[in-house]
Structure formats: structure tokens, C-alpha cells
Image (tube, rainbow, N blue to C red; front, top):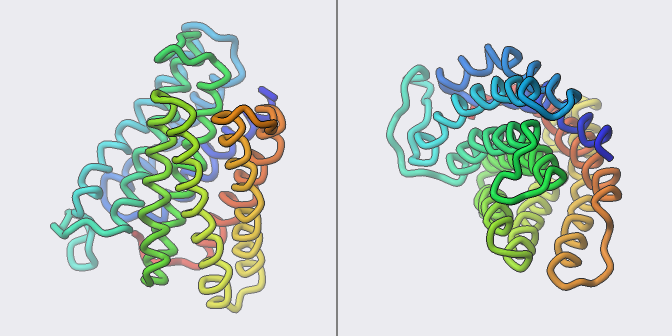
Length: 284
């Protein structure tokens, strides 16, 4: 399970997040994106080293970079975003669902990176065991960054009420899941249900509105895979959260990594981000 989880995290750190950052506007984000591999490569190497000071120091390089990225999140969450007339500075606006989705995407890698530093140091952060910490690293690269970014992209392209609802519910679901880590399985289940509802909306809108809008066959195929995978993979997320909250039989963590984790990383996030890059949208 650990080897598979490490490979999933590698995909998020080295491909999905840097590719996704190119879809976000603003000078600070672009500067961090331009130096991404200076932190991501040491962090990726740290995953394969024994726990200890060296692994923790390499992971800390990645954490420092993600914290620089997270520093751009408050402005977006407050509704200050780049405009065509002033791309180098932030113009004041009332925050929209797209702003909240982008702000969540910018903040999510830092949550993953802090968990990575603790896990590589062998420190039980907030009392969480290493398995939970490493799964948190994976979760916030994909259900955090990729999901929120995709919800924002769909909302900006579609603009209808379901798309706005998706762009609000995905960040909210991610936040409630994080809260559930500290307050109990019932809250985590509520977060999983909210996140799943948002992701199903994202998948449905991608299939019905985004995919038909392109004539490029490869882009259509990538969008189709990304949307279809969500329909199945999020069922697994709900079944696991429900089992944890109620005690009913549910998949093991190893099975979840091999099914839900792989499907979301390859099918949803990688295919989806590559498709959006091929669509060449204006930066969020």
C-alpha cells in the first residue's frame, strides 16, 4: 500500500499540481509555479527515504513552497483576483464561487505538505498515526487541489446554478472532511457526502456541457474519462466514510488506495487537468 500511495502522491506533486497552477492567474501564483520543482523534487525524494531528519528536511522544502502558494489564497477568498486590465495586481470584487474554489486549491497543497513533514519526521501530528498522515498528503493533492480547481474551471465556463453550487460545495466538503479529522467520523461522513455531491455535479457538467464544446477527439476523451471516473470513485469514498461512522462493512484503506485513490489520481485528476490545459482557457 505504501508504494502505491507514494506513486499517487508523486503524480500529484510532480504533474497534477504544477500543470494545474498554469491554469490560475496572478503574479504570485505564477512565480511559485515557475519554481515548483525546486521544492517538489526534494519532497518527492523524501517519500522514499527512511523516516528521520533528512527526510523531514527534504519534505520541509516542499512545505515552504506550498506555504508561499497558500499565501495567495486569502486574497482570492476575499474576492481580489487578477483582471484582464490589471493582470499583475489584484482587483477588489465580492468573492464568487470561482474565487472560493481557486482559494481552496491554492491552500490545499500546504495541508498536504505539513502532513508530509510530520510523517517523514515520525511525528504524530495532532495524534494521527503515519498511515493517516500519508493518506492526508494524497487526499489534499487530489480531493483538495485538483477537485477545487476543476470545480472553479467548470463554474467559470458554465456559469449556471448547478456549476456555482459545485464550486461552493467542493471546497466546503473538503473543509468539513478536514474538520472531521478532529471532531469525529460523523462530521467526516457529512463532509464526504457534501464533497461527493459537488464532485458528481462537476462530473455531470463536464460530461454534458464541457465535453461537447470541443471538437478535439483527445480532449473529449480525456474529459469523458475524468467525468465518468467520478461517478464511480466517489461512491467508494462515501462507502468508506459511512463504514467508519457506523461500523458497517466497508473497504479497507489498502483497497481504497488501489481503487478510489488510483481512479481519482489517474482517471479524474490527471485526465481532467490535461484536458483543461488542451482547452487553453483564460487563467482563473
